[in-house]
Amino acid sequence: MLEKIKNFLKGLSFRTGVVILLLCIPFYILSFAQMAFPFLSPQVKGALWVVLFGLAKTCQYGGLTILGVEGVKRLKAKFKRKKEEEEKEESANSQS
Image (cartoon, helix red, strand yellow):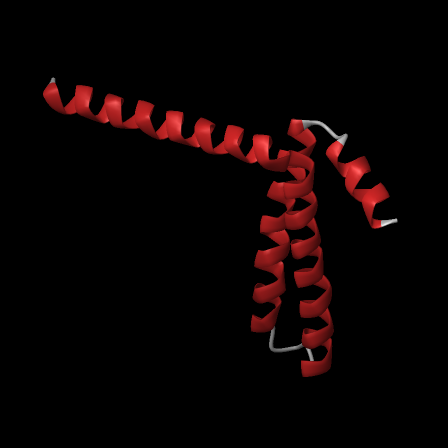
């Protein structure tokens, strides 16, 4: 059954993987931000943390499974190119 799920996730597109991966960010934020609410009992805070943190981890691992090794390399290369372009712009702006 686990292999079936893995194969289904691997069949999804790169863009879907990125979206699922980005969904983990709000779940992580919510899982810790809800601790600041004074009107929630400790039991509710604990239950919310488990659910929200679990959703964050599920999105994270699901997104990584969808992307696969090649997708992660593709994302890293994209961020690296963007950083290099920004550095070139900054150096061009400082020279003028």
